Image 1 (spheres, helix red, strand yellow):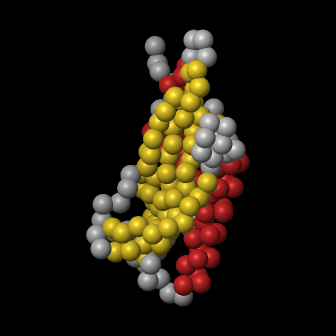
Image 2 (cartoon, rainbow, N blue to C red):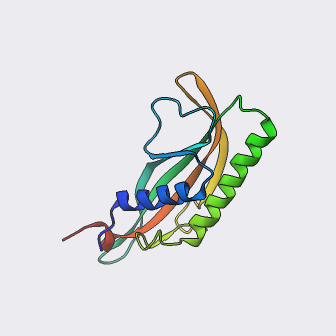
Length: 151
């Protein structure tokens, strides 16, 4: 079966939606600020590269970012931190347990075999003059070259 990045994005999107913690999720970055009263997520492609070569094939890494958003002015602040942390922890666990994204890839690079591992980094992002607190989850997906090209 040929690898289709869109299929992998759909599986990650389903994991985000199934958590029940994100009130809005979408594939693609937000252009306009998401609703400031809820936690939102965007899933988008970050980078792709060839990580390893063999005689007749190679191994690729396709990296996706899941970005969580909450309005930086959300009150109470402690609740915002707890909500973001809980959503991140649950999504890390769920993606770690769905090692092959429902058979769409060889596996998520959980341990960093080819560089970056499945991880989450907190920070802020500004969209149209609205500041959001959140995190970026890096999801490196290992794909064999025979899966990336259809004959």
